[in-house]
Amino acid sequence: MCPQDVKDKMSELVKKHNADDLSNEQFTEQANALALMARASLTDEEFRSVLDDISSTGLRKAIRGLIVDWSAVLSEAFEGFWAKTIKSIWRLVLGGAILGAIFSAPHLIWPKMDVKILNTQISRYDDRLTLVSFDLMNDSYLELKDPEIACDMKGQSGTTIKTVSKVIYEVLPSEGKRSFMDVAMGEIPEQVAYFSCYVKGASVHWR
Image (cartoon, rainbow, N blue to C red):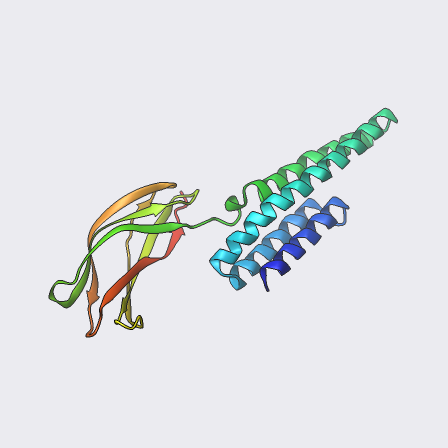
């Protein structure tokens, strides 16, 4: 599955929902299933790009759909079909709430985990790699926990000789930064010229 396939499938779901071919429950279920498939087959960069595109285009489609629904509601009201009008209003409110949640705040359904390692100071004393000090910046909308730090040990040619990692069992506040010190990463093999350290992963801290 490529990014364009995901966008096309989501666009088709929106069209079916606006045409009443899908109920709100069916739309939500199929949108979530599509998101899981996309997350498994796309890179992080491709997935974020797809979410941004779906958010903007999907919201515009949702607004157009709401305008059409309101026109139908007003038309039915003036014609005296009050029972049908109330049903249409209820469908409008419920559908708008679901679409708003999906397209305006996709991070609530597909949590964005964006953690960066900054200001890294390292030591290779006694042939052991130690992160003397570093900061972890959580740009996510949610609290995260247990970040895994990885370091690639590279030779002069740029080839990775060894990769080491360690999980830090701490909580990272949403859109905040924390500092850490003296994290031992392991032994350094021969011919290592430099290191490249990064955040390999983290988990959402649900309360």
